[in-house]
Length: 409
Image (cartoon, rainbow, N blue to C red):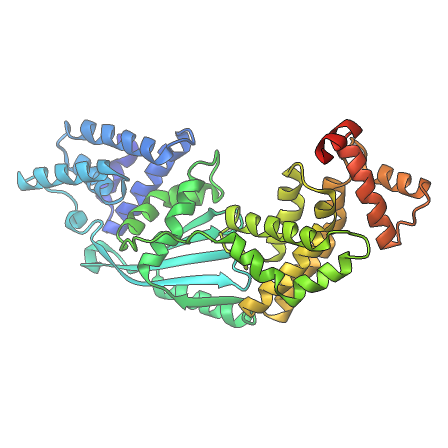
C-alpha cells in the first residue's frame, strides 16, 4: 500500500492527491466483506496511519495528508493529527499539504426525471487556495429511488461544465429532466441513507468508478450541513388509502368489479393497501410516486412473493393499481404522457403478472389453467365469467377443503 501511495508527493494539487487517495481506498473497499464495509475500511486506515507514523519521510507525510482529507471515520482525524505534529517539527511536504481537504460548498443541485425514479444530487466545491488546492469541482451521487440504492458516484473536474451539460440535457428532453437548486443539507440527507445501503451489496452497482470515487464522495458529503431530519418522514398509509377510496378512480374500479365480486369495496381497499404499503416500505416512501419501472417491479417482483392473499385481491390488483396510479398522477400533476406510459406498463405486465401470481397455485402453468377453464365450459374472453371461474379455482387450489372449512369456522 505504501508503494502504491508513494507517488502522491509528486502531485501538484491537493485535489489530485485526494482523488488518488480515494482510488487507493477504493481498492481496500473492494476487498472487504459487505457487512460493515465503511467501518472495516476505517479500521484498515487506522492501522495504516499507525504504520506511517513510524516512518517520518516526505512521502509518508504526503500519504498521511491524503488520508486526512478523505479517509472515513476517526482514522482521518488520526492522520490529520499526525500531519500536524510532523509539520510542527519541521518536516516538509508537497506545496498542497496545507490545502488538501480545505474546501467549502458553493452550491447544491438536484437533477430528476419526470417520474422521480432517480435523483442525481450534485454539490459543488472550491478550495480556499485554488492555485495549490485545486479547481472548483462537483461531486455527484445518483440515487435510484425504486431500489433505494446509489447506482453511481461521480467526481467532476469542472463544476460549471457539469451544470452546463445538465442544462443542455433539460433542453433536449422536453421537460422530462429537471435541474433545480437545493440546499446542501438536503443533498446529505438524501444521499447518505441509500449510500449506506449500497455499501452492503456484494458488488458496487457503479463498478470501478464507484470504487474510485467512494471515499472522496464520503468526505465531501461530510462537509455539508446536517439537516437533522430524515430524508423522508414516515407515511400514514391508512390515511393515503382512505383518501384514495373517496376518489372517483376508486369508485370506478369498484363499479367494474361488482358484477363478479361480492365484496368489491373490500377488494379495492385491500388492493390499495398493498399498493401503498409497497411504495411506503420498498421504494422511496412516497405512495404517490409511480413510474413504469415502479409498477413493473410491484407486479412482477413484489406481488409474487406475497402469501395468503384473498384470490379476488390478487386477481384484481392490476386494475386497482391502474386506478391508484391515475389518482396519484392527478394529485402530483404528472404530465399526461408520463401517466399514460405508466398505465401502459401495467397493461404490458398484467399477463406475466397473472402467470407469476395466479398460474402456479397448485404447481400448474397458466396454459394449464386456461385449458381447465375451457374444459369447464368457460369462455376466457368473457371477462366476468373468467374472473368468477378463476376465483373459485384459486380458492380450491390454494386452500384444500379442510382448510377452507376451518377458515369459515
